[in-house]
Length: 240
Image 1: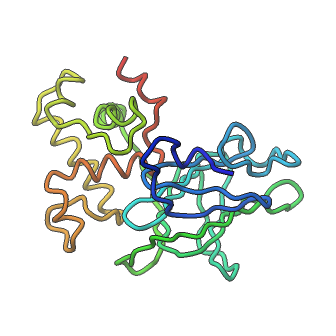
Image 2: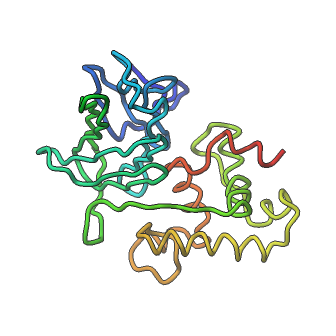
């Protein structure tokens, strides 16, 4: 089957990963995000038979900077296992993991210790320049920071087009009735906090191609918060 992670419109998204769960397969398209959980998600996870210990919306999968971003949007921890089955990370609720692994599993432990598994094979994995090949983030945004990020991502959220431009600093400022410099300063704080947790390409003095590619960095910032599920279509209500 073809999941909603690969849009139907031409040209088709490049498939960056294959996902398997309960004997079924899905394709994760570049710039897209898949949800998994017990109900109302792209990938049924702990749904047959229903395990109430698995959240209805347990998590999300996307690709960013050559790694698969796993977001825990549920109420219970998830495990990230290496291909040989060793526990690699415990992903707590409301956190995200960037996994620079070619192959791994996501596991939820349900009722009576039953294990529900998702297998991920990542085709476009890039070398991850840090001591560990996964990193876990706990991102806490103020109400103002979230509002600015929603305004940044609004063009993509409203069109569902992963090639759409992000808003500029000036467009964000006008959207939220703020000064341009205020917007730059607050978003710079968000970038600094994320960079401190290991997200590449967000600071000017960072070595490597990621920082040189994005001189104003808000494209990278927008791509990350969308991939990690920190900003979604539902957040557009903040701009109403």
